[in-house]
Image 1 (cartoon, rainbow, N blue to C red):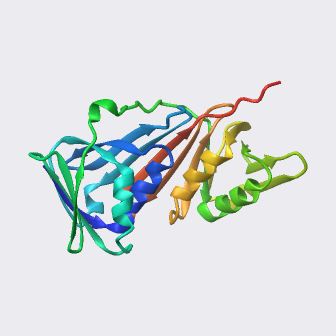
Image 2: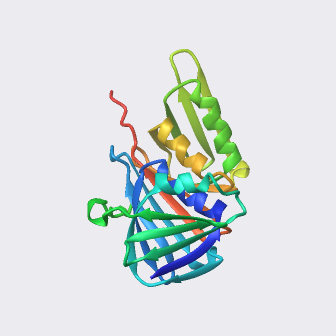
Image 3: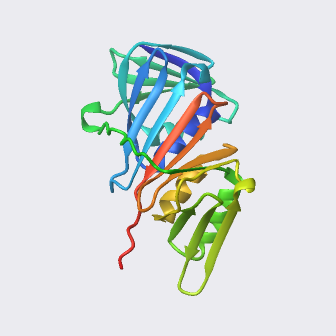
Length: 245
């Protein structure tokens, strides 16, 4: 069984964080909460998201898996304000998810979970960890978007840098250790990433005051942030673009 109520803005955070990569997901539902893992079709990035039961106004569940078309949920959310309460209930006999917004009811057909991948999150031992204010990172990304389609993330024991280099212009965001929320670096690292993917990940963290980055040289970047007053957590992995000599 699965029967829950939550604020529309919390559900929006889940959808925004996931639809940056995929349109369909397999929801793992347990008495403790809801989680999902997904890889984008190009296998460049993945998301690992969890939402604890305390993020919900009401929550009752047993262990089940549901295949959900996120575009359908998006359409329903357009009818709700951020503070509206959304009702979710799984009707097993109909294999539908019943979604309510006020007096409005939508009975959603579900997707076959057999066709939805369930990726494993690789255990990466990345040497450097940076925690940066989301607003600072967003500013660097916005400045870079008019210059290049990729960015370099550079880190050492003294500072973190975001660099974009185009044909004529460059952008540099440099934050020293005392300008960062946290910096733990054992070596100098540099990796190149698709700006489009990285930008979408940071945008999905809208409202998260701090964003954590784990970095290595020519390794994936791990991007993490909390939402739903700390009851929800998102982890992204984004593969690097390897520079040719």
